[in-house]
Length: 126
Ligand SMILES: *[C@@H]1O[C@H](CO)[C@@H](O)[C@H](O)[C@H]1NC(C)=O
Image (cartoon, rainbow, N blue to C red; front, side, top):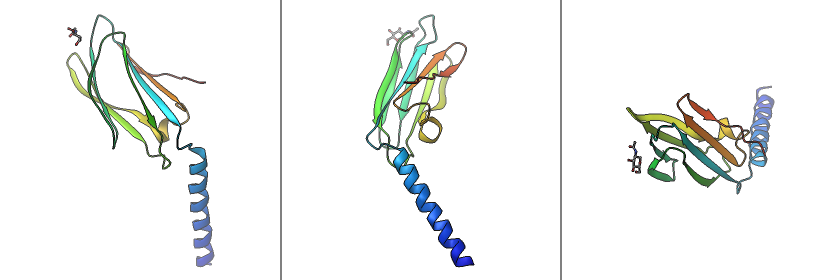
């Protein structure tokens, strides 16, 4: 009884691994962009990185954007996190791309808009 439960459990794990692999196209590129729409000529500073890639500290002028491409890995663990600054705020932390949260919304394009009213994750549906 216990052994068959274990086999069933293993089979489920294998199925889960298989299905998560087929749902991820390993060589698919995702483009992330973060737009500064703070207005009044306000600059936005961004420092974004993943485990393997560091975009470095960037100044994004009002009305422009910072964007980059990356390949989603087969493990579905991709995470790009950023520290954002504007005016007196120096290190507002947010995740620009987290596979488990964003794979459905951001199949190939993940856009953010930073405005006076808030930070918006845009729905870009192809
Ligand atoms: C915003 O950044 C630009 C380019 O670095 C700079 O010339 C400008 O003075 C900055 N504006 C403000 C309001 O700090």
